[in-house]
Length: 57
Image (tube, rainbow, N blue to C red; front, top):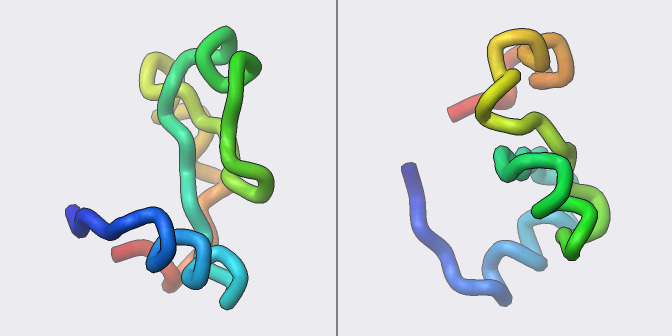
């Protein structure tokens, strides 16, 4: 897992990076980063099809 600051994260998203928010739906609804996919950790196994092949590190 890599930790980055908000500016690096924003630049990566703008450059086409794929990000997943694993918080639960109520947490995601309360506020999230636009463009980040929601895949709650409690159901993550069933959300694996949203992961882009060959882009996960």
